[in-house]
Amino acid sequence: MLHLSKSKASLNAKKIVAGLSAVVLAGAAYAHPGALADTHVHATHLDGLLAGFMHPLTGLDHLAAMLAVGFWSALTARRSSAVMLAPLAFAAMLLLGAVLGMVGWSVTMVEPVIAASVLVLGLLVLGRTHITASVAVSLVGAFALFHGLAHGAELAAMASSSFALAGMVLATLVLHLVGVVAGRSLRYQNVWKTRVLGLGLAGFGAQLLLAVA
View 1: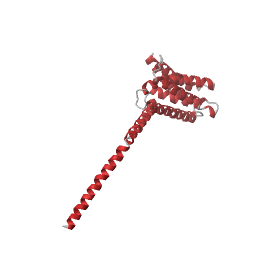
View 2: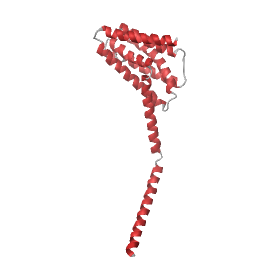
View 3: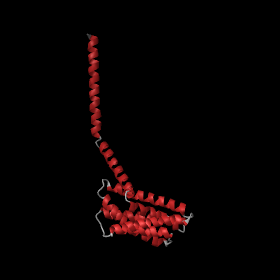
């Protein structure tokens, strides 16, 4: 009987310890309610970043313009240090335009200007046209502002829009770099390769312009 009582006592003690452990663990979980919330917030931020990154890749007009800026800059820059001037100007003004678009600022003729930007950039690639750095930055920056306005109006509706904005700018820089690498690789090759590409871009821009006119 004594042995049985000790066994029962040991079993009861284990149950009590298990119960107390469950209570302590539950209390610890409730003491840190932000853990699950933080996980959700981080997931939302990541979703916003990825959505913003994919945004320029889903529109052929934006994609073509961003690649063309890097490509044309690499083809025509007279100094290596100047290759990234136009791409960085585009990214900066795209960011400004997107912020303005997110807060509700709008102008007319956004889509026609975007289409025209593809046409003009295609012609610049076609002619391998050299212009001064200040004119290149101003021209590309003006186009980028309209691209940004179009993007910003759409990003505003996304969850974690600030992270979506960061993702969009990151994707823009990546596209510029891809264009720069392609332009550098073709800079000293047969000139007709770049002329064909420029003609294709200009034709695409003209088609876009006719569609929105």
